[in-house]
Amino acid sequence: MLNAQSSDLKIIPQPLQLETTNGHFSIKKEHAIFLDPNFQDAKPEAQLLKQLIKKETNIDLSISNAKSNAIDGITINRNTSIKNNEGYKLEINTKGIHLQASSRAGIFYGIQTLSQLFPVAIENKPNNRLPLLSIIDNPRFEYRALMLDPARHFLPIAAIKEYIDAMAAYKFNYLHLHLTDDHGWRIEIKKYPLLTKIGSIRKETNGNGIPHGGFYTQDELKDLVAYAKSKHVEIIPEIDMPGHGMSILSAYPDLACFPRKFEVSTVPEVSKELLCAGKPEVYQFYEDVINEVASIFPNPKLHLGGDEAPLDNWKKCPHCQLTMQKNNLDHEEKLMAHFFDRINKILTKLNKEPLLWYESDVESYPKNSTVFLWRNEEPDIKTQEIKSRGLLMINSYGRNTYFDYPQSKGDIPNVKWMSVLSLKKVYEFDPVRGLPENENQFIKGVQGCVWGEYVPNIERAFYMTYPRVLALSEKAWSTKSNWSWEQFKKKLDKHFIKLLNNGVKYRPPIELYTE
Ligand code: TNX
Image 1 (cartoon, rainbow, N blue to C red):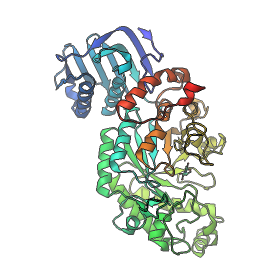
Image 2: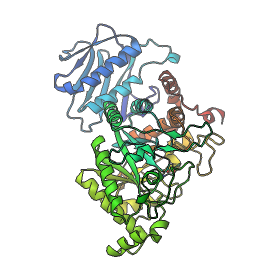
Image 3: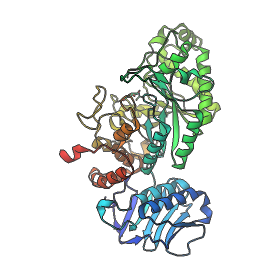
Image 4: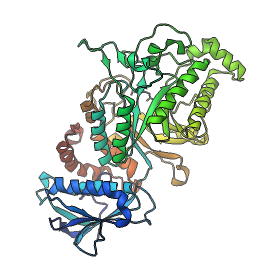
């Protein structure tokens, strides 16, 4: 066996352990897929494997529930000694392809790896021929996410499904949906019909005369959740509060500190309006909304936003000031902590846990919070601050993970708040920020964010995501000792062909070829 940390097989993200032997195994029509009788719940994965082989080789194998008894072919076995529930073993020897895992997710990820081993056109090899190898693999992080922002530009459900297909192939397991913002409210809430009737539509900005709008019904979202689950992706909904709420206030202005006529925002600016932290009806509103959200999304994780909420109005608002007095809060940052405490009580009743964008001026977040590091200007010290507050952290540091930023100088979008995020810069990302193993356990994962102000449709979302997300996948899944920019670059060509075959219009990283 050769020890192949090597990039020869071009697997992204790089598996934990990979050994290769000379030789190959060829799939033939006499073969079958044997699914362990003790692993019948993995039937959908066996089906997926069958479809993959059909697509790649045109050979349609049957699925058998019998043990393989040393017949050549493809086997899927439950192996409870594989402790990580997303981990798997994949062995290809002269007799066949052997996949093992303790759960369906592991088999699913083993199949994703296998799918990258089939040759692509430029390789000039028979398409049923696979290299002999042995892989032991599991993820570095349990949370490997991407975020889409249909609040800024509506994305149809079918488009989001395509996005899920592509991300699952690179072993991402969470899709965070930013469902509400100043620019649009995108989720049907039965108790508050005006949220979608008024809050999902904004006055036109780009001159074609059609107001921008759209929202998802609860049934559509339930269908999306089920679809994502079949790809081992969980959807995390975000209801951004108490700021980023012009779409709410346009429909229900009384929830503001100083009610007036509000409009859904049309320009990419952070609004100064917050929902009022001193009015009981605001907490009632969030409770009702969260109850309906919880009935759609079974995942315990619920994102509450919490970002960019300027306190100016709360400082002037009699309701807020009275609430502060009653609760002995001596400044507005404490009112913010009080606000999230009350919201968290609603979550606790529903067995949900709060996720929040990290803002260092929030005096305290609920104890069980997971916070997302994001602000560009903040130095590494914030990681320590999050740890010392006893919070869990997801690293979505803007300078390394914001896929709405341009990929090279002069590329679109050309917006002043955005730095350039090249493919290489994503690869330079260290999610644990240099902390040693015994110090970094509170960092639970990684997230790439495709903010939507300048992402008008799914084509643009793909263009901004690919290929940078391939670099992020190694940061999310692969262990640090397997990171290598030089090896990574050599693996890309095969993936570009696969992406094109799958209809993903990625942005060619021209700077790699011209610098
Ligand atoms: C900051 S990141 C925001 C978003 C914008 C993004 C644009 C964060 C929590 N808030 O509202 O879309 O920058 O890059």
